[in-house]
Image 1 (cartoon, rainbow, N blue to C red):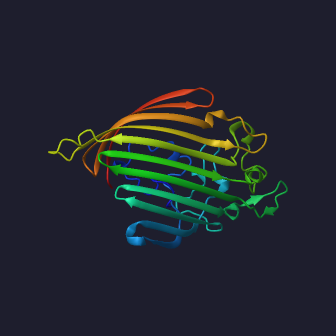
Image 2 (spheres, one colour):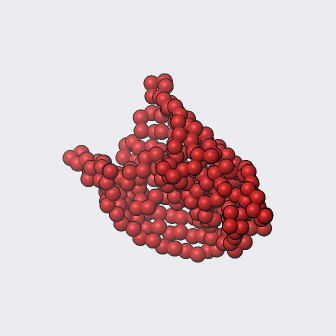
Image 3 (cartoon, rainbow, N blue to C red):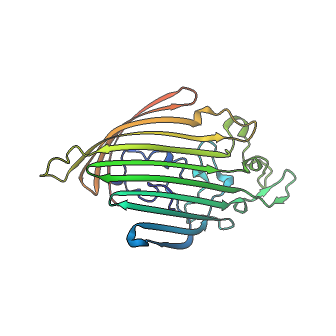
Length: 277
């Protein structure tokens, strides 16, 4: 799906850090793929690039509170096709190495559920999902910089809390204690890296220290009476180094400091070998 940077360009040497940013895991499901049909092109000599598709969409009954939209994606092959979505993306590249993009998404996912009321009567469910995203990436003069922001809205999330499965159990029986499906989620980050070997003309190896700061909230707004899950409001700082002997291979290490809305801190150290595949 043409939504965000990493969801489209997700081979490990292309992005910094061992783990993908939380924005590209929880807010933009990773790796988000659907079945569909559409059109794409690059008019004006490649200055602009557009994509527009009609696709399958999420199953809202499979959402996991605190995990954004990722649980509702059937990853293409198993996607129900009773609900549909439209997605579009426009990119502009004013100079070589600087690309900015905007994407918008809208769907009616309710028909993908098999929902019943408390008496066992089959229901027709309306569950719209809307979202937008913008990003910009720059790679020139040894500098690699990125900014990304994504926001999704589920205006009728309250209806999901009243729906039952065929056996009479609620879709989300633990919503009061474990968190409900939110009415909006958001996340974004800024990232900067520099190739400190650029001045060495005898090598094409790249060594890029980088820093990234991001905020993610998978319970940004919630159904009345189901809020208070501050642990889903996360701020994270990451510093690390990426070494590329060639463009298709990257050795990466980083340290992350993550803070949630309750003041809890998690420190994580990572190392990996990434390659194009």
